[in-house]
Length: 144
Image (cartoon, rainbow, N blue to C red; front, side, top):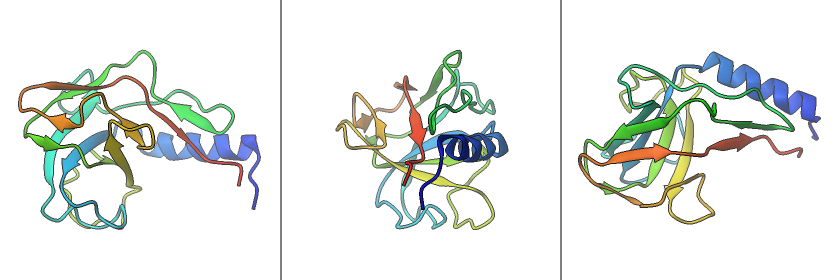
């Protein structure tokens, strides 16, 4: 199946409209096989919100050419509440507690300092009290 740019834009805009106001939660630990699986014993390192404000979720630009990016007027950041390697992240509701979830549209991403990761960070290790920023994020649906 091949999806047109208009189709990919429509899917991305619809998904991120439904999940507007959500956040990224970055974890240390074994990466769950599926995004709806429990995080198990993984430790929450940081919650990425708009300007690091508790309870203020993130929003996105309008998609283009099958890609969608963080809203450029927002600063996505959070303060690390635990230390450890940044192993994976979830796009999830602010109240998400890490349990198995088959009712929300969760996304799961790899996190590292290597270019092949979904979320590229300058330092792959979280330090308690340090600020973690996400300066750039782009998500896409490939044509096929």
